[in-house]
Image (tube, helix red, strand yellow):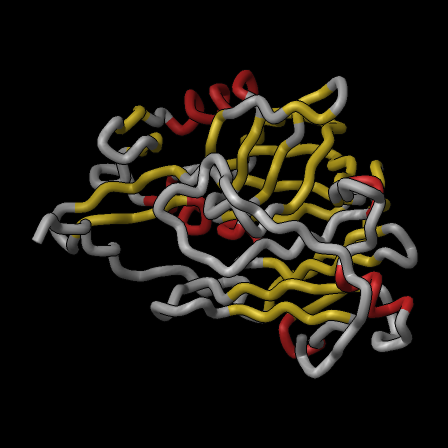
Length: 262
């Protein structure tokens, strides 16, 4: 991969899977710690490092904010791309060396000088397999829906907000604070606008789901969050880094056309 070859890397052959109906891909490359492996095997990136093929046992993600119709992003093994982020990197220790869990300080909704803290000191992680802004425990996300005055849309399975009579700019920013630093999603960053210029709907890409992780429920921040931030996963120092993406402020300016049955 990427011109690097390693030998004796364990992998599994899958004959059936649940939850991936209709999806086509060649496989899944796990990036978790050995404790999450079936027999304690190393992830590919760590195997490459142990074989002397990488300078550092780290990997990084950069995802372009607006889809161009094909997969547009960058995964680097063994280093990071300084052209893809701006400002300082904020680091947070890995709290459990299985998945890349960490303890977030808080998540807050704010409009102007008014702020509402939804949760504090909670377990979180980043998920490149989740095409949403984030997934959070039901009790907390229901509070967010209430603040947003969001209404469930059964046709798409997401909650929607009234962005036709109220500009998106009047809705709250959502701040995830990590190691004392707030990482902010503005309303266009956590909504999916579908329709056309005269008739459109703003769906909230926030999912209420209790995802157990030990004795608590984990928050998972997905690709719509990661589109605006550069993420670094460091196995050597057991830490995660996050910085503003070089394209942090880029958001869609036109609604996405609704699919047709043609």
